[in-house]
Length: 118
Image 1 (cartoon, rainbow, N blue to C red):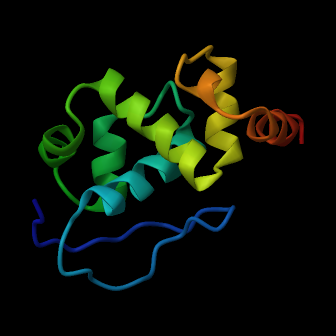
Image 2: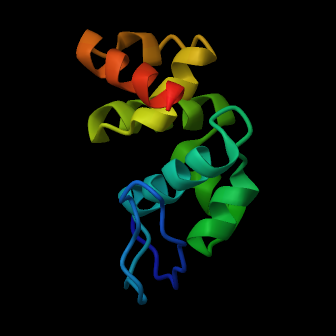
């Protein structure tokens, strides 16, 4: 389900920045990019619907509609971090002993832990 939206997401230090401008719709991928940026900035365990909604310039209700509960949002964020190779968020998930982060491949885990030490 797509919804019209304005979006204003700040740029991320590792290249996950979104294009400036006004996309015509919200979609799960756009909101997930905002969630990954917030997880990097605030920490995987401390991210909130409000912070993600603020980064995506939408309501927290829309975040809940797409991702459901906070545990399911955290699960989806870790899965997206693995799929997109986001070492910072994956390292935070590993440090938090997240079961989904533990499913990442050994090379990705090693790169994430190395990123954590930098």
